[in-house]
Image (cartoon, rainbow, N blue to C red; front, side):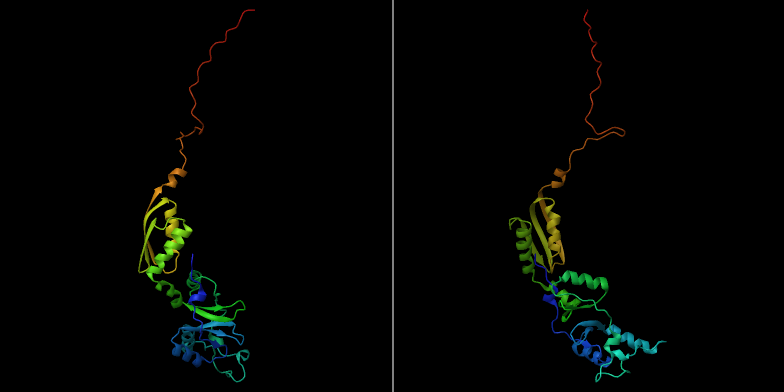
Length: 252
């Protein structure tokens, strides 16, 4: 079954900053490109952290607080870039960065964003070099799939290939990402399996299940059990005991 991967939806032309990029230069980058954050990379294009508009606002909020904003340390300064009095991307970024690889799936990226509470994920190669960035907006592009594309995938990849059913067994309709399944499959257990597979497709926002089935395999799988009275075993019924006939003894 086709599932979109991060490499298909990520933005490849990444706006980024260096550790020594000054505060105001970062603000100008965010404003000019109309973005909410960017990765901070080193000279080898490896991701050091992520800097968001929230980080910049937090720095400004410190100006009126009891403690001053963080200052640049000598190790953060590269000759010709900034002076020790400047505030740079390296001071304000969130580090270490939460990253992904291009071959990971879009659902995996969405779950990671939700779990870690982040809006963007730098995408790195096997050497941890920056190759793209995936934002929530990028991930939402999968829901822009055409209904005909979704319907065709359900029929060809799920009904026929995965479930091994004739294509006319299930009637598939899709409208605004909501898939309706109608028809009759062979066994009852096939219904939830089919519905779950459709739910997992990229671009599907809902499933209407109108499927029936010919055989209730739940009933066939449940053996008949005789009711057992408390205190009695579950063995076969016993016949009432009969007196044995008297033995006849022959004479000497």
